[in-house]
Image (tube, rainbow, N blue to C red; front, side):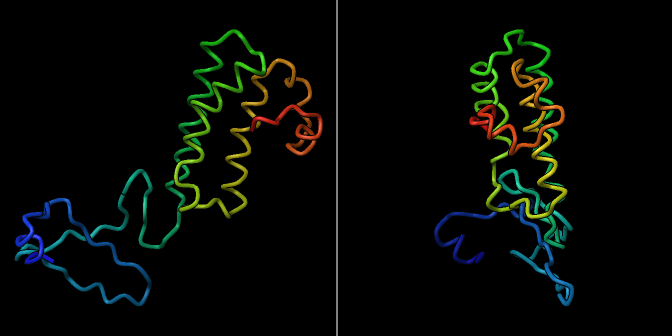
Amino acid sequence: MVSWSKEWQMLFNIEKCKVIHLGYDNPHASYFMDGNRLQVVSEERDLGVIMSEDLKWENSVAAVKQSNKILAMIKRNFTDRSEETIMSLYKSLVRPHLEFCTPVWSPHLVKDSKLIDGVQRRATKLVQACKALSTGSTKTDLLIYGYLDWI
């Protein structure tokens, strides 16, 4: 790879190159690039997705924390609680954080799905018309009544 990168004048930044060992039977070999040993890490962030050596996505659920912070900011700063306002704010500010790289880390664990549902529930409670309904209702109930057609 190094000879190819030199030939095509696309040099690697060796300081940014890292090794992550996947699997339990991995012999943890040392890797070198242009005579320099590459740093071994247990997790690495790439395009906003944190990849760990055990392939668990617990750290990638940080998007839920960011979404909750944005919902709190919306609650503090916007007095208009109509469905149209909250819907447009949710779709433009909150939902992109929840949907970013979900095909990669796909919240297949129940605890991860509950975290995302919690964000959606909080967004529903911001709408004045849904406030009384959403306290004891499930997402399915709210969808049936037409309150969550935007989530």
